[in-house]
Image 1 (cartoon, rainbow, N blue to C red):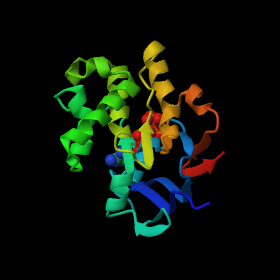
Image 2 (image 1 turned 135 degrees about the horizontal axis):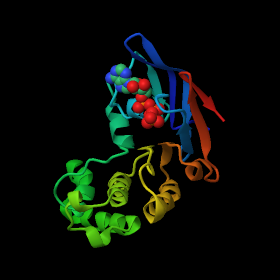
Image 3 (image 1 turned 90 degrees about the horizontal axis):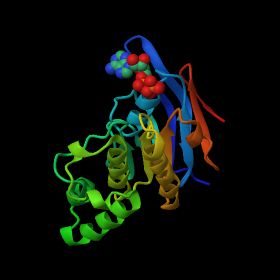
Image 4 (image 1 turned 120 degrees about the vertical axis):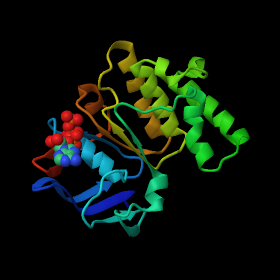
Length: 217
Ligand SMILES: Nc1ncnc2c1ncn2[C@@H]1O[C@H](COP(=O)(O)OP(=O)(O)OP(=O)(O)O)[C@@H](O)[C@H]1O
């Protein structure tokens, strides 16, 4: 099977320190991965690199069978890959507009966007918050809005940085419940996390960053 994404020779340095040096990273279409490693191992940096938010040394990517450099970050990846930050930054408008924003920015019409956003709000359990200003949301609500905002873009690859960190009780359960359904929509998902319940999800592949190398378990 052709992987969705395959990267060779992915190296990241901070000054003299090599944070990671990865021979090959292959992500299957509709595959689910957890990325583990101790604090400071480079998990967030690796996700940010895949999302084009970190500069890297020359490195080639095969995306859906086409070869391209990872830097400068290609348009095809910008459209296909969505990164969800651990502490999502939301615009000071409404929940509805935050979820609609990416689709409108892509040029979709307001008329076509509205039902997609309605469906996403229902999926994320935030429909009752549609007119709420993001500053008034709890951490769990913000994370669910961020997941809905990512989902409407129908990414081929979704990168989640510690989606359940800082959440507990029902807020954590609600976010946890959404994650398998992202896979049902056909996206590949890579999640950096320390959460044992996410690591134990059925069918999930385990990637571990250790001493700058990536192990597939
Ligand atoms: N711009 C930078 N310059 C130098 N070092 C940096 C820079 N950005 C990140 N680092 C270092 O790179 C290392 C990896 O950070 P990163 O946040 O990717 O790790 P992580 O595995 O996600 O950690 P955690 O589990 O604590 O979130 C850390 O030691 C961090 O201090």
